[in-house]
Amino acid sequence: MAKRTRIKDLLNTTEFNIPVTVMGWIRTFRNNQFLAINDGSCINNIQAVIDFTNTDEALLKRLTTGASVSVIGDLIESLGKGQRVEIKVTTLEILGDSDAEKFPLQPKKHSLEFLREIAHLRFRTNTFNAVFKIRHALAFAVHQFFNEKGFVYMHTPIITASDAEGAGEMFRVSTIDPDNIPRNEDGSINYKEDFFGKATNLTVSGQLEGELAAMAFGDVYTFGPTFRAENSNTTRHLAEFWMIEPEMAFYDLNDNMDLAEELLKYVIRYAIDNCAEELDFLKNRLLEEEKIKPQAERSELDLLTKLNFCLENNFERLTYTEAIQILRNSKPNQKKQFKYLIDSWGADLQSEHERYLVEKHFKKPVILTNYPAEIKSFYMRLNDPDDQGRTTVRAMDILFPGIGEIIGGSQREERLEKLEQRMDDLHIPKEEMSWYLDTRRFGSAPHAGFGLGFERLVLFVTGMTNIRDVIPFPRTPKNAEF
Ligand code: 4AD
Ligand code: MG
Image (cartoon, rainbow, N blue to C red; front, side, top):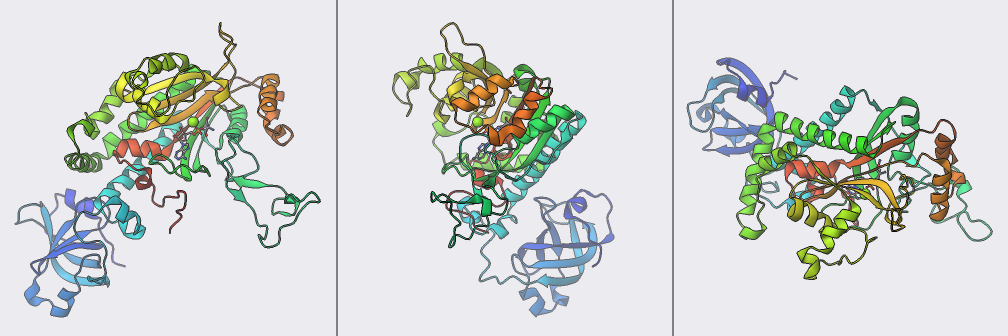
């Protein structure tokens, strides 16, 4: 094919009266002469002007929204208002027709729910162009951050036999014929007959394997898909999501929090510096959307102000115990407005509580630490019991405005005996995890790590409100279209 120039580059050029080739999809065709073409390289279209008196009538009729075209012409400074440059077309070719009657994306605003149902076209909207450009930039920034710090990118397995979180929310992986299930004498499924010779599942987290790598490389991270069969139909949960999980030897909980805060600030800064156009578009989109909301429900800060605010402030760090005190005395608790009232130490925090702390009380990102052992995973390091005999673990959750929990992490239990005791208490089979426990047998070391939910990060940076709209092909309960 002829070499094409990206529209993004043409819109920024200062070289005029040169022949250029542009390929893209028609957004609109006005007055039989003005073609707005978009090639996905940026939100903006380029205008191509057609000399319709010298163009075949039948060809003009095929210039419909969605059709893909190749145009060759001279790039000139635009005579009209609204654009700096335009193409004076000399050759026009239609690469792929688009039936105007059937094309579902008309040049008007569509609801995000509607667009989710036509996933192949939703990429062609300005909103999703901006969202997925930012998603790309954030992924790149994550790798750059860790690369600059000398971390090793480790690929942990997608198929595994372990339940890293011990929460039992796993998708089974099996080649067993459901119509002919091999059984043991007691009637249970005989997984020895299965593909891997044992029961396997899609990973819920790469952490445990990451810990093995950290015990050799020092500083590692994973960035891959993770799967949770939790039946949470919310705007914050996906059944398939991407997670960034660094794991560091010789780190304690404070080092862990410092790294997490630095990472979040770094990638947000990267998006501000590299996605100005996309963020500006999404900022205005949000303002537009909020106009129809009652004053009380509108956000206090616009998107960019909110992002910058995050960079300029230290995250508020406090313990779970301190948070419970604040929540217990809070207005919504006293007035019984919380769905789950906080009456005693040990309660698990619901998103209403997390959001109260972040959005109402501190009005900035918050890091909660030292949760009760009962409500956290087996691998977290036990603290000594406090003066009231309560046991906590060195966990940390980072809570963000509008999002709730964006990061979950901890210092790990590196003492073999304590870890085995915890596993026994929680009925986690030690025999199957001996590959993991070996790290505590041979040169165990203090270490820590965390998991950043990538879609929750993209949600925050783009200001979108539903997590389904920041992943190209969302998987949620009862939904695996496309
Ligand atoms: O808090 P979680 O479950 O922690 C872990 O998986 C640890 N193994 C991480 C570690 O220490 N290496 O999950 C971590 C983060 C959450 O804070 C949240 O941002 C995101 O992953 N997350 C989800 N995102 C979308 N959909 C879901 N269903 C999610 N579950 C967790
Ligand atoms: Mg968590």
